[in-house]
Image (cartoon, rainbow, N blue to C red; front, side, top):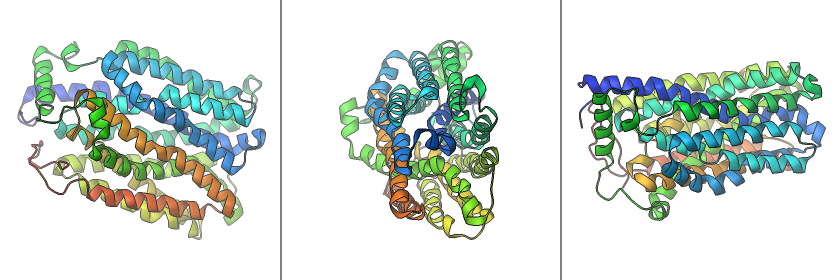
Amino acid sequence: MVHTETDPVGRSALRKVAWRLVPFLGLLYFVNYLDRTNIGFAKLTMSEDLGLTETMFGLASGLFFIGYLFFEVPSNLALHRFGARRWIARIMVSWGVAASAMAFVDSAGWLYALRVLLGIAEAGFFPGVLLYLTWWLPRARRVQLIGAFLVAVPLSSALGAPLSGAVIQYGDGLFGLEGWRVMFLVEGLPAVLLGVVCWFYLTDRPEHARWLTPEERGWLTRTITAEGETPGREASPWRAMADPRVVGLGFVYFGVVYGLYAVSFFLPTVVAGFAERFDADYSIFETGAIVAVPFLAGAVTMVLWSRHSDRTGERRWHLAVPAALGGVTIPVALYLDSPFTVMAVITLTAIGICCALPVFWHFPPLILTGAGAAAGIALINSLGNTAGFAAPYLTGWISDATGSIRPALWLVGIAMLLSAGGALLLSRRRAPVPTTTGGRDAVLD
């Protein structure tokens, strides 16, 4: 393989790929993550309107992942067969319709049903985009550019939190709807519009990219193909899903995702609770602005950490250390004695979660290619996202049972620490894999 630092064609090709695909896919994921987590802000007024307890809210939040998990692998296999352009467009339009329809629920039952439907509609988007990026990004630059894509997660929370708060507070009464209903309606429509754009904008494979020169198309196709030709890595979907390494990766991802969704769904509730604990009352918009701070810090550090991982070629510790940071900090946050110190520690938690995410997704393509990669990546994401159901439901149930959110956050910390420990077991040996800096990537046993 030709090193990108010494090949002008390679540098030019990767620069064009980075600027054309990563910002657009990041925008799609921004909207995606906002539509699945904005229920955390809706809760501030929706719970009273629909008569939801903490447990019922946790169930509604988590039910999204039931449909999501069952349809994840079939959806990713469909993307591999029909192409990313068609399938991602289909996913976005269907989830946008389901997200907007949540504006019209009139009972907990309808809320549950639409959350399941939203999960079915979104199934396959995230692993599909990750699979798509492996068709375009050589291994040596993958963590950095996937990190640039995944920065949409903290940015969605950082920018989406005050946006959601503002819509709920100032949009109340618009179209004759309560503020939380307006929020669901307004924030669901962009997915439909962007789905239409996908159909015309995305290119399935490098060899079809008219926006690259023939030399750039040839370089990128040869490079990606050569990285996928390791003997024994091609597998059928069923063999890939039965691989113990795939299950192990799903376990590691579970802990990181558990922390991500616990913070995303319940941080607005934590900040709203400052009124009782510290006599510090905030409007819904001010709550959104405060919630944005940890995720802004996470966005910046995610980009820097991803670059450092690619520059050094080291992966395991770049995954384990931030996961451990999140696990250590989140349980102690609510024992502190001021809003400032609570948010400072939660900011460290968000930094740990955000830095772990892009490094984790370096590992699956090391053992998976072709249709096996489509199924394996989807299964890893499905196993990890069982935390998307467990985190909000258990957090809500434990909060109702104990009258405090603190025990639930200890469980979050334990899950993330186990994930950090699992990350250190991902590889017991190292094999030389060229990077742009001459470093080495970890290879799973």
